[in-house]
Image (tube, rainbow, N blue to C red; front, side):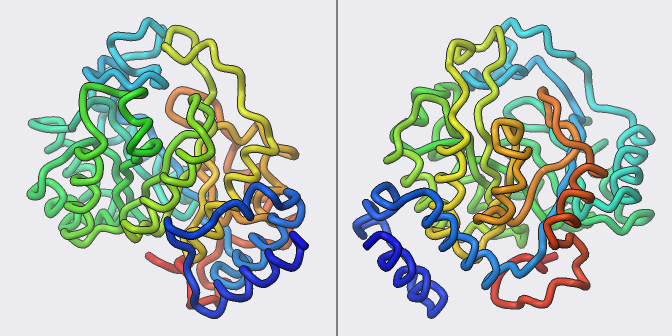
Length: 336
């Protein structure tokens, strides 16, 4: 019975139907994981083809953050021993970007700690983006916190195409994770970036003590915001943070979450983030069951998978990250 219901739902979504908050979502939990993944894979093939989008990041400024997000090693109120430094020199950031471009990555982002990048450090970021756009072909993304409208406009003017700003979890659970800013602050920032012409990459972290209902709420919130790139991170609990005691989420729960997000956001790039190593075969099964993108290389404060390893993995799976090989136009895999 579960097989038939998933097959029917998958066909409806391909035909244009979209699941909404008010719909009965029990099918996602009553259905065997394997069956749910098969439906998610069909949707992935329909809307993203064989394309896997690979993005990379550099930790452009580290530590001493005044926010109190419980999962984060960079919050000044947590004693994690994380490296701390001011905004990196331009030549160092560009060297990272060029190396990632040459290794085959699709996108590169500077990520900075703190509530918002401002003042001279923001000006230095603008100079770096301008020079990267002049000298490199890799797509440019940015992640600098709770910016204001004029800053988004300037990022767009110097060649940044995407802005990363996670909602992290559900609106209900957000105050359990952070109290120095609000869920509404994050939503306002996302909408402002979108209004200035930037594609927004937004997702969150699972395994922080939230419920399945919270995960559904996050998926629907991202759908309602029109988010086209959704990174799903699995908590890698860092010693010295308030969540250090939490056990890792199971691989099956991660895979079910990925599949659910594909059903609710069928045309988006569902992007593997931190915690990939909790998955079977380092995420290979996920790339065939709903995930159409990944952050590759090292993460901010945890180790990741190298670009070369990911390039080989997607080749073995019969997938590609080359934009010219992506023939599907109904989804977002070719969005630039």
